[in-house]
Amino acid sequence: MIQTVAVTGAVVVTTPSIVALADVRKAIEMFRQVNVEVLGVVENMNSFACPHCGKPVDIFGHGEGAKTAQAYGVPVLGEVEIDPRIRIGGDTGKPVALEGENAAGAKSLYALARATVARLEEVAATSAGPSVQID
Image (cartoon, rainbow, N blue to C red; front, side, top):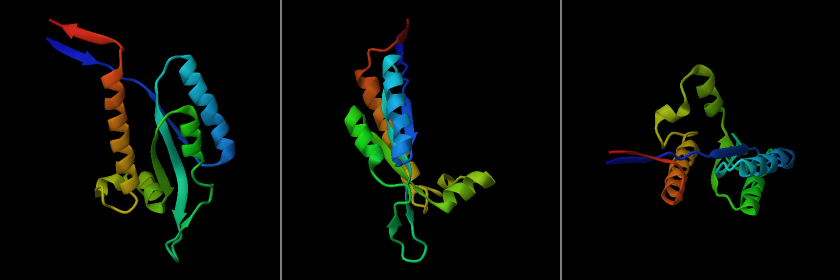
């Protein structure tokens, strides 16, 4: 007998801007109303490494996505920095992630992917969702 369980859910992506978080709150509330599991929150563009000194600059703020996730009881799946390499890779069709998980600009993306997979496994383990049995 083969049994599979389908797991679906939503990943909510935001910038740390307080204005953007109003949409995140609305999205989480909407997903809950229609019984869609919110897998977690991703804070995109959370910091920028100054090219001169290397120190992080919080252009849009920082940590507001995590505060909102905590308020709604959902995990933070990751934070993705502002990195020109990410944009250049996307624009040229050569994603920075292809350079490997230790490549500058790719570390946060790999961490996000791992956290999302772990969260899907967690939800699948506790899900009473639909299942298909083949005898």
